[in-house]
Image (cartoon, rainbow over all chains, first blue to last red; front, top):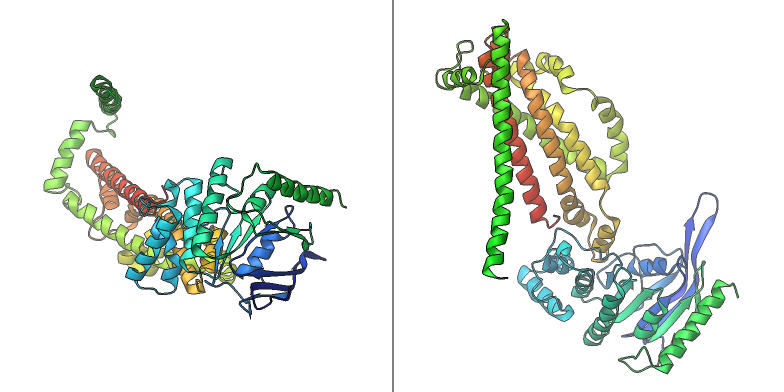
Length: 257
Length: 273
């Protein structure tokens, strides 16, 4: 790819090595990828392939053993509010109400209460939580909890949104609904999204590009451009064909081809 | 829902509550009657260490108005004196155990440093040390320090456990939101620990209350419920001794209900209920 100045996030020969008792565990190796601004990337791979580790490295929650990840040309050193993260198990603060959860990052940055309220209301409206502002997380369903998680991540106005199997804890119906909601939010906020999943269906439904990782040590195996127009129809022949291609690829990988 | 159904539900709730109240009355009446019967029986065979409820009631009135004939202090003085020691010992324990518990929970090294000592001291019943505390700190501060010792460890250990139980995802979430180390502490660890602190307080209240009565047996200048119980016991004035016992029971019930209400209010306020 020659559009280097176009890319917002670039992985340059990224490695992650965990020291074990006597040996080393290589979780990620030689990972290279350029992500463009406003792109929706899904990273797909078998469990234990290092995809969550990769995401945590972007978030700055894990150190990078070798190579570098650059956001807008600057190497990532640690966590920061320029990257918003959404967790599979929500990670909401149970003692904070919906708005107080959303305002967390603004509070951290010392934004004034009036300003915080304006911002959190904007994101409450965006993710469809109107009427639940004063609720605590334990009063919300899984889908609504994750709406809070998304709003909280967006409230800092980050350059990219990192999502670690965000709908993995939801039932199938809520999951499909949340996927549509996420696409709407993505189109309204014009964010770049890195989305981890192990569902081929989810990846093909959401992504501009699907990055398939190898099993451990994880690296890029193939990249699929999903050129289907949105909203995508899961029952369309193109969708089914793409799904099948990727599923076959994962199956081959499982058999060690 | 029709009017009839609604009144049916109301009737159902009333009946359930009514049954509960009726059984409570039955239980307390039975308790009183058995006590009464026993005291009459024991009295008839020449044993008079169990006074009857009416004797205790009369002794209660005398204690409350003029004070019992032995300590000659009104009951309220004893209660205030005990509460005073209790509150100071409790407050002191909280003030010391909370910061140490937070520190030992948050830092591995302070845990390595603190644990050997606390592990040796924790199993020692506070009353085993009461004599030492009275000798070392005098009769004024001795009982306070004894209560302190009883409350200190449950608060310390619960707070430490609370800090160590902080959900790592919450820490990650706060870090990705740009929280500094200090903010992680004040905005994640501290609020997360509050319910654990409340548990420590509830346990500490129970222990502190047990400890104070026995500590006052050693010495209690200015009175105290424990002193009342001991001096009436040594004089064989059992009806007055029971006045002391019942006072302790009532105060104990009040303190534990207070902490329970506080605990549930806190968890409600924190949305963790």
